[in-house]
Image (tube, rainbow, N blue to C red; front, side):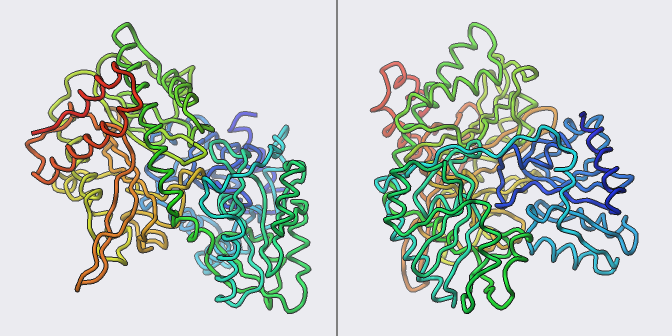
Length: 595
């Protein structure tokens, strides 16, 4: 079926089920950002492939709500579908509920798949639409009724992430969690999020593209750990190892029954924002203790082993990018290279690096106007041809056994315009401001965000996405809980702590012309303690040169020039021992000092 036919089929199901609206979120039963194909309901019904968005379908309207990262992509992908693009004015907000409040009749009946929605989301729907006297049915899967030939869930093998990489054994991590459980008054803890499960148990999988996780649930009790997953995913040896560590593997489908039949007197800790309403309703209210996601916070504080691996993996990734850009420059002298071909070449070069497992996300290769599409993915049949002129934005990352990378570089293949140089230099000044920041302990991402925008604002410029997200260690490239963003939310209000690894990625986008973004990963470290308190700072750990052709050095302060020259000297010193003579010569030129 075409998208328009899918929408009409679902609208027929509304009538059959006596519903006035149906909500289709982007997530899955584990509240994942990136999901297996079988759970990509929003993508299937709309044709929109962005990672964030909500679809609402009524008998006479179909709409997609998404943020500014996807406005251009959304307009393109929704053409001819009959689905209207609703542009969020504030990212990550439920503005579809305000539309429903205005457009649904009083007493409206709303449906959704309770496996895909959290109790917190259902409560928000109820509170926002309270004046409309609506009712919500959470046990209706209309997508499942009309999606024929739906792919089955993946069943790929789970493997051990060795302690030489992880730095802590699963036993140590579980003991740390149990200590937090005891403090909170619970003797069981429910864990739903796939990356947190993988981290806690030092296990990895490949059930989700680019994310080394496996589909599962975990319940940590005082003496045992119950891992709900398909047994066929585990080798005999791994099962035996897990059993020795007090971990029992139970069928994935048994989680509902387990929660429904908790022994009397047991108290289970659950994060209401990280569990489906379907599972939450199985738990007795007398046994439920609300909590935040304890493991997420433990996971984001990288230990010394992880940090050292992060520093080393950046060398490998920097070497790979050096070889990629040298190849690209040489190839463009002879002809053109498609955006998709460049993404494939990058993957091929990364594969030669020790410990490489895969990409951490599909590479964003945006030539000229495509660079303004923030989460653009080139398709071989329709992507642009890169020429030996103009601007290219490349945002990419690798998954290695010893770390996850995420880097964006914007490069120029011909003489840039004055406006391109000014735009790039203002973005660079913001990037450097965050990289150089010293700040008191307790400072959060909302407070830090303005550092990256101040220079753009002075010239009446801005960008529509957050400045930084947490990054996992051989885990999801987007990781919570910390976030650097102008939008005030739970994550952006979280204070930064020593050991957090976060992206630093300001940008500017001119629709139909070009996009500019400079992204490095930064590690939060101690700076100094004095009579004014404890201060923190960032260490930039990504290693690859910034294109100096686009920099107006006259706009840089003495301190900014020092940071840029020092960064390039570090890049050269750390990468060059791993390069061939011709590659060293190329890198030396890219890392020359600005005056």
